[in-house]
Length: 321
Image (tube, rainbow, N blue to C red; front, side, top):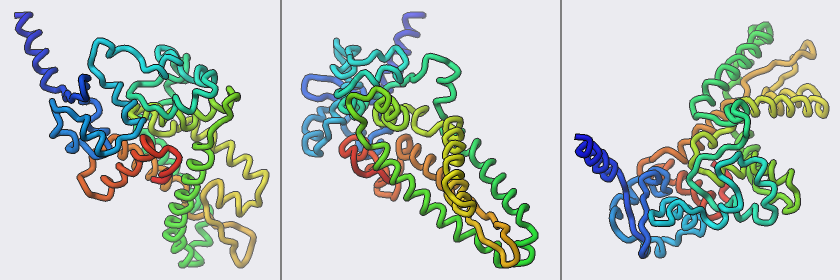
């Protein structure tokens, strides 16, 4: 009976496998099917077939070939790539990457399909990971709180001027545009600025802020920015901007609030925040581009392909979502 159960289990597992061949090597791609830039259906016709010719004609990048080694099935299946021998994946990664020096950029641009641990402390590690649903659960109540507070703080002014409420919609769309420009700028000129090869601190900081996302693009817990450090960084940014800018600019830049001076006083009318809806939308779309399987030739299908070009072919372009 046990032998039959083991046989049935083995047959079931084998049926779930998606094996392809590349020359003399064999690869099991079931984990990768939904991550493929072309979508799930792109690979279905290649099950149990040789894909060497197809990979040549579609000009797969060096990063794509490197990632393929994660799925190789052979006697050396458990052996690390040469680059991966530079670190110990069984230990927290954050304090290792700074020692990579001139090898860091090559290493971080070579993706793997693995789970990444950053910190030794279980508590610190737990607040460094983010399931996708935490983003709306955490940020939407804050968004609504700021909106309601801004409305009631300025209720008397809104009551006097019926047009004041009409500021909400243009401020919302302006906020989304401003968020997109800000995210693109930070992504392109900060996150993709190569840290000095001899700086342990800057290499570690680069990896913490963005490098880890390129190293482990399929780790679902590392795709979104964790709320706790995001809130701390937001508070720090707010404090710095408050020291450097006047009140009206502080509201606009730091809190994402449009301010309007009334005719009768120097009160400020706060209306819809632009930061939170732009950020929430950005983060959830980003997650979908990695884990979703959009229908072929739809808008999100092309966006997924474009974003994967950024990850696997052109690391220093295609920063926008």
